[in-house]
Length: 80
Ligand SMILES: [Zn+2]
Image (cartoon, rainbow, N blue to C red; front, side, top):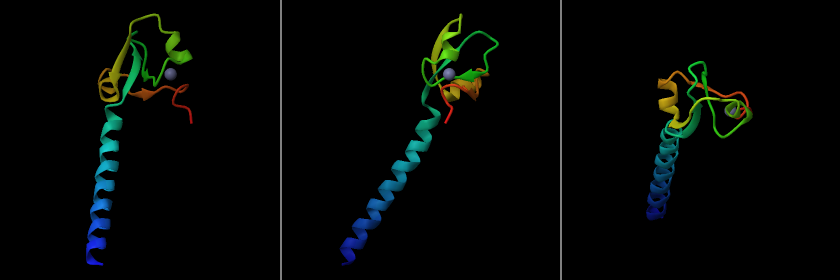
């Protein structure tokens, strides 16, 4: 019986570490930004907001988008 508890505990531990890893990978999720200089949002996909972009569209991570001043999630593609 003790063996089972040990297995369950280690499974739980793996589950927790996997969930924790997901949180980290969310900040390195790739998004799209319009390098117009006036844009302030990042996009999850090619949405209508991004299609209006007449400048260079760049695929970056969320972290990079924030660093470039595009730290706001787009209202179209991040609408719940
Ligand atoms: Zn968008």
